[in-house]
Amino acid sequence: MTTLTQAAEHAAPARAAGRPPVRLGRIAMHVFMLAAAVLWLAPIVFALYVSLRPEAETNRLGYVSIAHKLTLENFTNAWSQSQMWRFFLNSVWITLPAVIITLVLASAVAFVVSRLNFRFNVALLILFTAGNLLPQQVIITPLYRIYLKIPVPHLLSSSGLLYDSRFGLIVINVSFQLGFCVFVLSNYMRTIPPDIDEAALVDGATLWLRYWRIVLPLCRPALAALATLLTTWIYNDFFWAITLMSTGNKRPITSALQNLQGQFVSNQNMIAAAALMAAIPTLVVYVLLQKQFIAGLSLGSSKG
Amino acid sequence: MALAAKEGVPPVAAGRPRRRRRRSLGLTRRDKVVATLLVGVPLLLDLAFIWFPAIASVFLSFTKWTGVGGIHLTSCKPPALPGLPEPGCLNGVQNYNQAFTNYPDFWPAVRHNILWLIVFMVIATPLGMLFAVILDRGIRGSRIYQSILFLPVMLSLALIGIIWELIYSPNYGLINTVIGHNTNANLIDWLGNPKLNLWAVLVEATWRQAGYVMVLYLAGLKAFDPALREAAVIDGANSWQLFWRVTFPVMRPINIVILVVTVIESLRAFDLVYITGKGNPVKGLELLSVLVTQNIVGETQRIGFGSTLGVVLLVISLVPISIFLYQTFRREQR
Image 1 (spheres, each protein chain N blue to C red):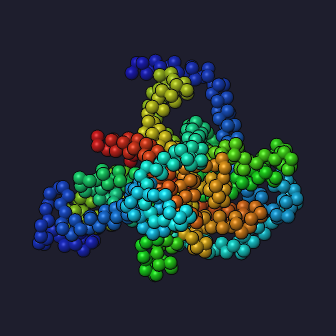
Image 2: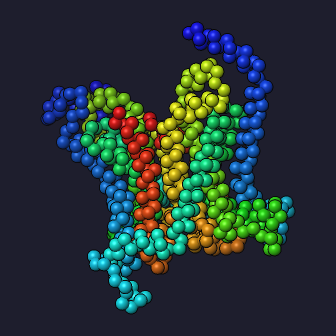
Image 3: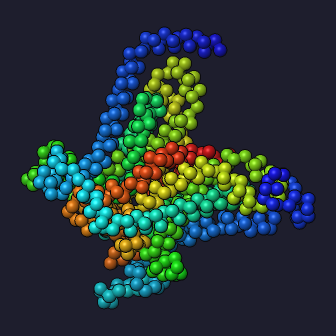
């Protein structure tokens, strides 16, 4: 204790004498972060600026010029000429079910692995986690062939196969994201004291009830965070959509941007407008749920 | 008791067969079925669509196959009539041989992947960590800075590619106009010039990766016990020492996660390059992931060879994956 008090006495005058350098340090940090923020925001602002200007004008004056005219015509044209609403709908059809199914399945595995003591628990976790870390290109070749082979009832897929169907995209997105969610949820469930659902066990609750009515509702923060993460990742997915979906019409919005690039070849203003419109749902999610999103990432990175 | 009443489950004493009343988890047969289903369905999905293809890739890498017809388990002979599609055959390690010696894009792709990794580890990740450390100090406007720096992570990589194409545009773009190189005589083609385009794309990737690392590191810093920090400050540590001697070592688990994320993200690099090339191969932007896709998607499918490249990517990826798994699950066993 004496060392602490002595040290505190030393620290106090030291701090008083060291005031100016600390101030300078703080100013430097502010300047640095301000510069970083400006640099980081610049590309998006620039893209927005270009998208608000008519193509004829930028063709004359270039992108870096004072606008004589600001207009929303790029946005309206992109919307109507490319039928973006259809691609948005596709994205919703794929993203929403995929997120829900992933969360249900992942929480099921996490529940069993964290509550019941099977010999294979750790092996299961390793299997799932490693599966999520593989690059997508590693599995695409056989996956492509599998997708061409498995028949699917026409109710779920208009092509009759997993390939070139929204159902197929849901399946692969679910499978691919399962690993990360199992990892995060099992960590999270481990922090829920087992007494809670063991009390229900004594009361005669079945395993299913313990999972669905007790443990799962307690995971709401983790589920919310994961839901925001998954929505963003699946919505932004590009690779599965371009490799496993050939009909342009059925593509989700992010990969459809590639179609648009072909369609409006030289009209970069319109492409920028389309791309920015495509980003709106993720931006909405971001603004509304930023806290959950970041909580989700940190749940995945730290252990419990 | 309240739970039982709520769920309408009869109290235990009312004759439930085989119900063990120990503290530990006794499972009825029905429970066992439920448990099997709960694990079985996701496991089936994971095995069928992730692990089976991964292992099949390894097998396919030893074959030569265009996708037409089946694979005959015979070794490949030179085609009788060149140009005619042949059924699949076993090629042994020939594919690997060809990739390493004959395929002109292979070594450039490996070099580029390594370069991508180096830039991430030396620039993007430290930058993200720096942002996190500064923001953790709680300077004014931290929330805004955090939001802005993290914003690129929310955007699809395809979108990022499109945004930066505007900046790099040779005739109209931000950079060329500002530095005066936007006339046809002295154009700098940032995305077309093979000497420059990888760096141009790396700027885009760094723009995104820094925010991602920042958030991960910030989460770790926030979990950092302030008592440790105060003790060090009282003992006379200045900021520099504080970070390197106290914070950084304690953050070891997070450091490992960030390291692994960095490596895996750099191996995953695909979307940016693909959208920059609009689906076509671009000289100077060869990457292993792009090469795999080129060999598989499109009219001429070289499935065996594409799988070979995929397996190379897999083997390289297994290194960070194993480190991560070892680090994470070793602590599990403790």
